[in-house]
Amino acid sequence: MSRRFLNMVSQKYGSRLYTLCRIELNKHIFYESAAAAVQQVAKAKKMRDGWPSTISNCKRLPRSEISFSAAPGLASNSNFHFFSLVPGQGEGCVMATDPHCNTAIYDSAMGSVLLLPPANFRKPCNSIALSIPKRRCANSSSLSHEDDHALYVMSRSDGSFELFNYCRTRVSDSPPVDNNWYWFSLPRLPPWLGDRGTTNVVSRPFAAAVVDNTNTIYVSTSDGTYAYDTSTGIWRQAGSWVLPFRGSAEYVPELGLWFGVKGPDSPQHRLCAFDLNSSAGPSSLYEWGYLDDLPDEWATLERHLVYVGSGKFCIVTHCIHISSSEEENVTNEELTLLTGVELVDRGDGIEMIEHRSQRYNIQDARIHCVL
Image 1 (cartoon, rainbow, N blue to C red):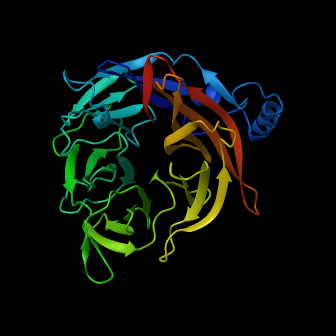
Image 2: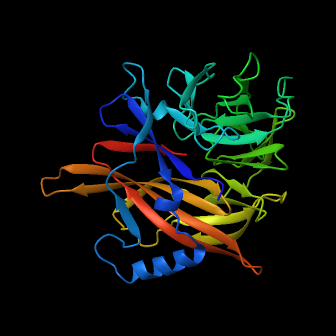
């Protein structure tokens, strides 16, 4: 497994602080082997007691690494605090932007913070982020270094789009120089052109993936799917089909497929594998259920994947529980579930093996995001 830790950002209720802690994968999410996972999960299902026995409860978060503070007056504007890993910099290199577009990177390996140029638009916390290496940005000659990397970020609220260009070296070893690390605005999604030549209002993007040897980005809205050419900076309509997942999909070279989770509008928790190389649209090849025994009273708000290497994923599921008393007082309780799954190629097909599921419902804090 190429990663040892997950990065979890939480916020205390009524606080301006966003706290980063790290979760050890082999201790909390994955068993020591696929065989051990099959045995332990089967054993847990036979010993049901209260909450689904396969979902353990974490009453305390791990020790915090660092806290990011929102500016005064922005504590309630939590939706526009965006966090992302910076691929190629290490699994503990986390970028943060606030509602004023101020940007900083924290490097957990060195315990250092690097201030960066401000972003061009404020980003909702559920913005889609896709990383592409060794590509030249349209209308810019700065992405020519062999170690250059681009993090493409798109808002799911209005389709605002930009990239963050950086060198694939540790921030602590090689500080950025002028014009090497910067934000660059990209054209938004164009209006959708209907069959009769009519122009529709642009729908909100809900899914995206990198395809075609990292040269093309597919972005789906309710109207259909667009294709963005990263070498020319030009959008085109790819087709009326849509990507069968929400958020971003992960490509696993060892398996030769893309993987994503179905959105909260799906009645079931499903992980799917598909092929994006078909010009007719994505071809769904596999679907697996997870969290099959989640109580019905917990409604799903959001799901996304975190790929940790070696065919292993952590599926992050944000839920809400709505309960009402006889006095008709309604209380909302938020819950975040981390589910470890492993995908194994058996030769005649791919098998999904479920590892641990951990639930986090800390009384005085909410889980903002998991990276």
